[in-house]
Image 1 (cartoon, helix red, strand yellow):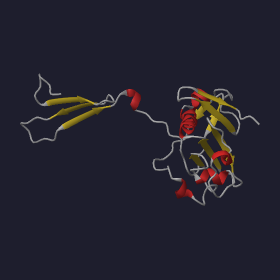
Image 2 (cartoon, rainbow, N blue to C red):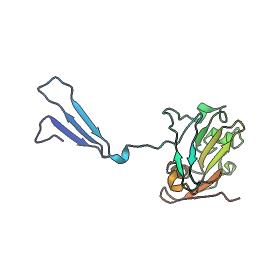
Image 3 (cartoon, helix red, strand yellow):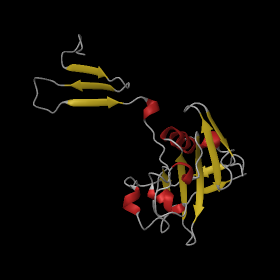
Length: 189
């Protein structure tokens, strides 16, 4: 949009609500000014994937105490093939089932992909499971029967504050039919 009041001012709005404003005074050789304003709801990020040593401390009572989250450096995300042979030598959050993620298969005790019933996963469910390795490192697996199931599991981690009272123990099961219909529970024996 061009301003009717100021001929040197152009403004625009993206479909995501990002506001652009450009000022270009024709009578000067100065550089143009461009201002970009993102909606407040789009100005933050939660990241929960890490490789290497990290520590998180829970302070206060077990039910709803304060959590200190340590920042994760950008560039920490890796493909399973990039950590082959190092699955237990560092702290890892692995996303994806043992059929498509070799890190998950290794943690489950297999050198080959585990698909279908061999995966130990159930149709319509995802698991969030903590693996403690002998060397003191840990692995956190988010794996679902299908991609939609895995997405529900990752949403639980991304919105951990909403599910904190259910994220207990070394393993939980995530069920649901959509990203707004999610239930977190202890695994059944």
